[in-house]
View 1: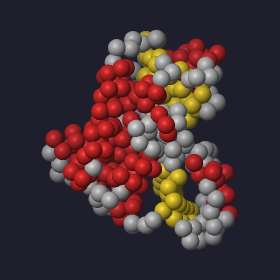
View 2: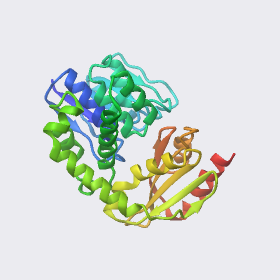
View 3: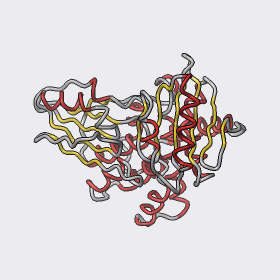
View 4: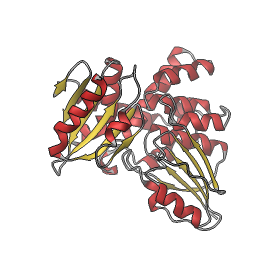
Length: 321
């Protein structure tokens, strides 16, 4: 029997797993990747009795892999907040905690499951998913002061930033390596002390890449939506998600798309619904091949170049209506 942890390489996936492995420390096989590598379970093979934990990847996109490991006799715990598919899937060896509400993330689902045992990590995950109000509410419930809350917000943003890239080579830390660097800390405040070098590298990279993006003007802009074009460069791929979050925070009544050029001529797209109307991002992106996500934030892995204008029109029409 072996443990297999399958998790999204962003802040939400990592912080969800940090909570679970603090609650139940085990040696596990780690299956993860860049944030957009979100069909991870489809590549997993299991034996009877294996225990698989799946975090922050869509059940809809991983249905084949889920069915396979259950047929192989594994026990699966599945926590997620993305679109799960049109029909409910149940199995005697499956425990599923799925909630697609706009103000929910995988880290908060795990926090509820563990009854707040490692809530500070859940706060980091919520901030990383740009659930600022959720992070602030949990911080207040935890008795944290403003300075401590801001520390956790920065960490969440930096971990989330690290997950974006076309390949792991684009990242400052491979997500499994970043998890391993943090897993022995029961609280992020312990990590700030014992893992300072890791934190500093994330912060320096984030600040440098955001500085590269700060002077970019929108390629498309209306009261309903705005789209920003980023070049085919590692810094642009790294910053695409957190830059979208920053734009959403600055203009909460408008939807935003960050569109990054790819080497093959197509585009990587990150969409953020308006913070004051956190719905529709997944619906828009699923209209295009390789698109998916959640109501408040979604993306398209490979938008064909000849569909760019259609995408921008779809984005604007959805939120203008």
